[in-house]
Amino acid sequence: MGCEVRTSMTDRNVSALALDERESELAGTVHEMKVPAAELFGDAEELACEDAAELATVEEEVRTSLAGGLQPALKEVGGMLMGVGIVTSLILIIRSGWSVDIDTALVLIGASVLVAFVGWVIARVLFASGRSAAAVGAGVGAGVVAVAGIASAANVGAGHIAASAVPLPLLVAGLLSPGTATLVIADRMPRQELRENWDDSQWLRRFRGGLRARLVPAVTARGHVAEIEQTLAAGGMSAYSEFGHPLTLAHEVARADKSARRRLWAVSTSAAVGAPLCLAVLVVANQSWGMLTIPVAVAFFLMAAGAFVVGWGRRPWTTQR
Amino acid sequence: MDDTAMSIAAWQRASLPMLVLCVLSVAPRHGYGISQALVSAGLQPIKGAQLYPALVRLEDEGAIVAQWEQSESGPARKVYELTAVGHAQRADLLEQWRTFITAAEAVGRAK
Image (cartoon, rainbow over all chains, first blue to last red; front, side):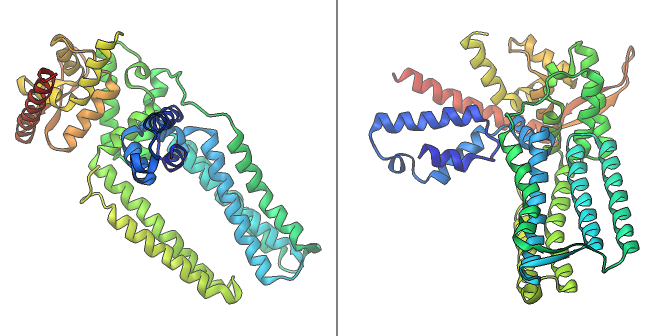
């Protein structure tokens, strides 16, 4: 039961320490009462939901979010590489035989798309960490490299074979290994803690960036920064000792801000609905999945419909924080 | 910090919105002033990390409004003031608090 509750509470922003304590508490109670856990506590998933609501912290949310450092960023990049690898592998399996001729132009296009995706992830990581300027730089840099790659592919043209008769299993293994390796590295990394050494100017910059990343309007964000500066001047304390981690406070403040909540909902729902819809259109337009084109497009369409239903259920003007 | 101080801090965290509304019902104050008022009343010092999000939530709920006021000796300060909604919320929270205290005392006497 303890393990089931622990598994259900994973990824619900509960710290490892709190999870350990709760698990041993449940195990101790079961041992003491000598009654089956299910009889004592009821449904494990339900209990996990209740516990998570009580034990989840904003610090843990920030630590495990994209803003939490290298580990979550690597997980995101690894997941993206795996996604691209799996989709490309499936297309190759559907369209090719046991061996494939690798076209140079296609490799260039594939690499450009990959650079664009990785750049997008890095830009998101930087933006979520409150480094807006660096995020724009990373996004623009990746975009330039991707466009240059596609332009090179156009120059090379079709028909230039980089390698012929490459065995498909070898190619699939090559496509899946970068994502697998990245995910394994991320999984084996030691647990990362949030940074604790900040000078006030760095702290305030990151706090403001964190507010903007949570879509708090610029004027409101400036007001919050000015108010904290005023408090620091009045009290003579350091920003970190008084307010904790800047991104944790930024998350809490943004959550309490009506317009930020609405903006965040609009952006996340649009992305969740728009991305699968775009993919459905691309799949149909390119007929890239052969005889599976229509089922795949329908699956993407259903994903978009599901995301819309979930998003609508979470609309901020009817739900409580 | 001993166990008693820890439990007072925990009570304080749980009842922070009510405490803030009570402080502001006396007079408008800036954030640091609210913290000082709580300490003057004998409560534990409140960290900005707890107070500030609570103020933003109360402002979002319409219980308080904030205005920037130019101070004579330094930079402008954001001063919070209770609204009619805030007065009603304060009365409601105090009522709930009294009900809870009464019930808790009854439980304490029943042992």
